[in-house]
Amino acid sequence: MKKIQILGTGCPKCHKLAENAKQAADQLGIDYEMVKVTDIKEIAAFGVMLTPALAVDGEVKLVGKVPDPEELKKFLA
Image 1 (tube, helix red, strand yellow):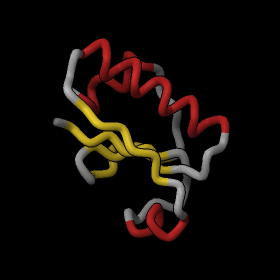
Image 2 (spheres, one colour):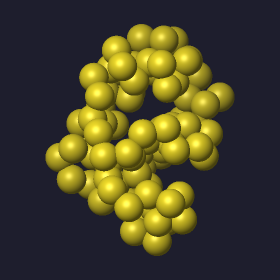
Image 3 (cartoon, rainbow, N blue to C red):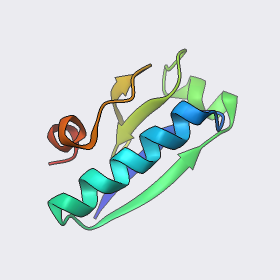
Image 4 (cartoon, rainbow, N blue to C red):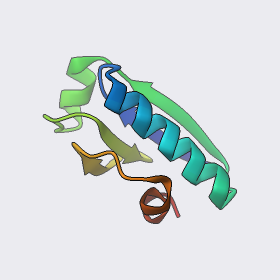
C-alpha cells in the first residue's frame, strides 16, 4: 500500500492537489492511504518550505505545484 501525503495548511491549492492525487491513484487502481499533513513543523521536517507538496511513502515528489491527475500518475505509479 502506498502512503500519499499532501503537505499543506489546508489552502485551496492543497485541497486541489489532494483531489487530483486521489483521482490519479483511483485511475491507476493502486492501493493507497492518503494523509493530509497540516502541521507546519511536520511539513518543515520534510524539508518543504513551499506548499502544497506531495510525498509518496515519505519521499517528497513535488513542491509548490498542483499538477493535473494525468501528470500526478507518474509520481504514484
